[in-house]
Image 1 (cartoon, rainbow, N blue to C red):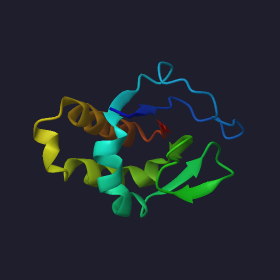
Image 2 (image 1 turned 180 degrees about the vertical axis):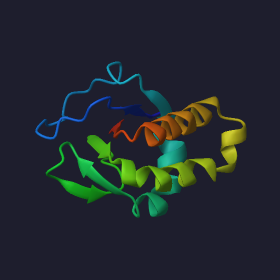
Image 3 (image 1 turned 135 degrees about the horizontal axis):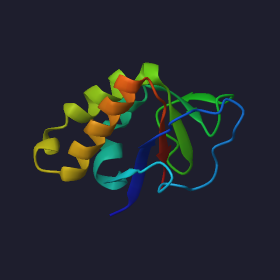
Image 4 (image 1 turned 135 degrees about the vertical axis):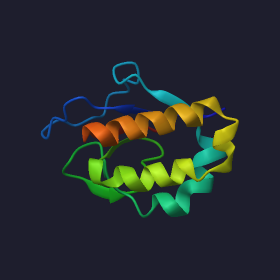
Length: 115
């Protein structure tokens, strides 16, 4: 398994560069990059994100870095994860979907730590 991790940022710092690997700080959920991210890549490219800080707009995920996923992109991400048929048998995907929905409900940014 090649881990990729997702968490929720309680309070986004607009001036901070999120470059430290701190998955425990954000109570991250881990999924297998090889299994899921490649399959989702085309859809992820429709999702507005930021790489490391809010001054670096991009799309999709920084595969080898830190991605900030803004609240306005969470519906797209939720759809990608919920439409994956493997969610029925993969506990980590179910947990990721719960996390996305929580961030969406609370209007918070998510953070992604690539491989």
